[in-house]
Length: 447
Picture 1 (cartoon, rainbow, N blue to C red):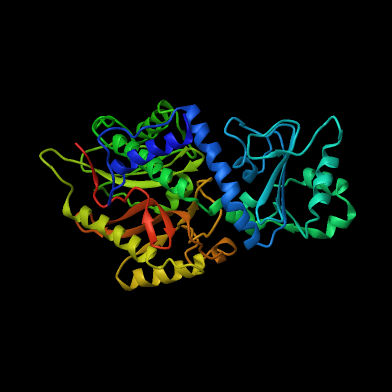
Picture 2: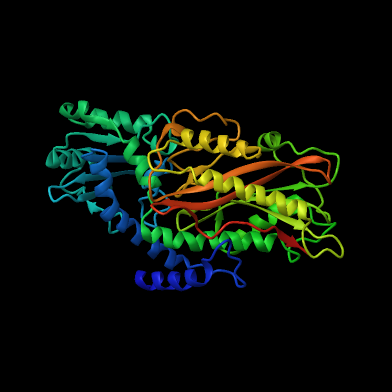
């Protein structure tokens, strides 16, 4: 299928799926075939290299970016650049990006095999038996002022050059270039966090798929009250994702809060996991769930209420509790501004929320090629005073985030405090923060 046709399909889907506050499509969102997915991924990679890479390399004053990986020990960033039909690097795979005199970027693969259509072949084994000699020929051709390598202290995603490959590179690199080596960290993070318009459009659809799966899981179709356990539901999510020919990037979790004497320890649950309990009428359910599709990831947390006999809606005290979570979301996202660091946004949002009587915990993270992605970290559940390093990184436009947080609410009718734990995927652009497929503003109901 041609890429333009894929975009047309996506546009039609989005016209019916993307509304606010939250889409619940009556029919499952369309999922592309494997062949169609490959066509989309390859075209996106081409667009990103041709339209995004030149501006990023100029912005970060980088003449040449070098990525080196051996098979099955891939640099996390190199994996975002391989063709869709490549599930791993092959032997030693070297990718090189060089600014050219026309202001664009030339992309080369110094590898024993052709790597898609984005990269020019940079090694002819017949004329250059040494792969490293082929690399040096290209370096001498461009004579870069600097050569960026993927080394980083704050982001594992940008620290993909392993010691063995670094030693081999330095042993073969002409001595005149040894002092031109720099860290690619700012460029690498920018590559991972920036989304181009075509990705954003498809991202809406991807999040709609995740929302639809959650709605199906939190329903009488899946849950038999008094029989189904929280762990049964967890494994239903895993199995159902496989049935849809999709992947999860982490094991889902399902938590139950109810009117009993047991307190809900959020921090302990983060550390040790949730107990397995039989789902009963009157329970407040919570799920943490994410999928990987077209190389992009979702990360969502929503709540459902299990109706008691003769109930047609959730109790008002739970409805109001959810509203408090939405209020915290608004307070938090209203603090987003270009140039503000994650720690600055976190501190301002917590101060404003506490002043309005909320009990907030904020732990929002970037989202994209990785679930816990590179970019601005805005708190962690156990670091509410700020996160050194990636929390000091400033916000940039056209970036995606999992707006993850919770608000503690005392429920008088249950005589205890509960947590409204929400997580919705959003884009930060010149219009502000907006949710890719809306957000949960009403409890899902299990009849």
